[in-house]
Length: 436
Image 1 (tube, rainbow, N blue to C red):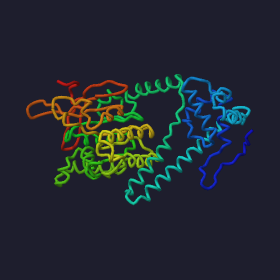
Image 2: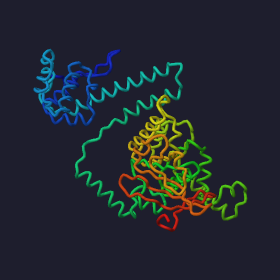
Image 3: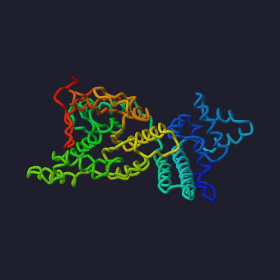
Image 4: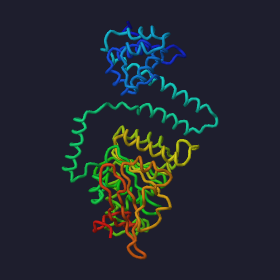
């Protein structure tokens, strides 16, 4: 029998582990096979164990579970090689009941996390001592390793009753809030299609160069700020001040050129002062480091999220620095896309991510295709919504903007016609409801 007061092995050179806890955990599972489901749900694998016989037993249990076989103590012991069978029976005799399963599970998992933390620290130290390594790379690689540990999936099985209750709650929210259950875009036709931006969603806004995707993202950020949301804006292409000029023009309705040329009317000056006051009291946080990786974005977002964060805007995906410069460009963008999706799920907030379209989308009068997303299909696959921002020619020298919902996991697709007033960086919905 094991002692309930067993202590943690912590000798110099030996990674933290507790043989008694390891044997207690496996013995509990052997006494109550239903506990195996909880252990697997927590992510149990043979790496959790340091005791050689426990590693063998855990491997056999996991193998039996995959093959649909029993994982009770007798079955597992008799499945072991002859030379290990006696030791296996001894492990399963460690406890009489499975009453302390949760305690053993928490302890073994916790010690495994400590060992993984030590491994991450050692890898970071080794990289730091390498004279050829770059300081920021050392910091970001260490941050990624710790983030993976902190993001360890501890989700539980959810009953249909619980899911139904949550789904019905979302339906009622849309009924009581004019159909908008997420962060509103401020464009009525778009909100009717999307019901707003929802928690954990990645909204990819794709466009070619000079179509207005930065202005569009600024307007979405502004609408969130107007409703009291906390917004973090990552600008990898433009400086914060340039982005703010666009937002100031949008909020005030006064062209940037009029402000610069000092030819504002009294009314325009009042509008600008009101806009300045709005930004001074809004919850907007801006980052314009053009050398940010997903790890950097994650670290900054998580820091702000401790105080509160409702939405992130990233301008734009292809400018995010890849973690592995040796990977192919398609792989790099795929890792960036996956990292942004993981961040949205972790923080439980929508992330608006801009993306560049390939030159195939340069033709006017035609909505870009999902296949036009530049450099990686992962931008489409990982996104919950994909919006295409494009221009439709109305005459030889005139055109208007269109935003098309090209992908939506749980909603309708279709175009929304827009007017873009470039002088004040404002998008407004056109009167007609559909393309001519």
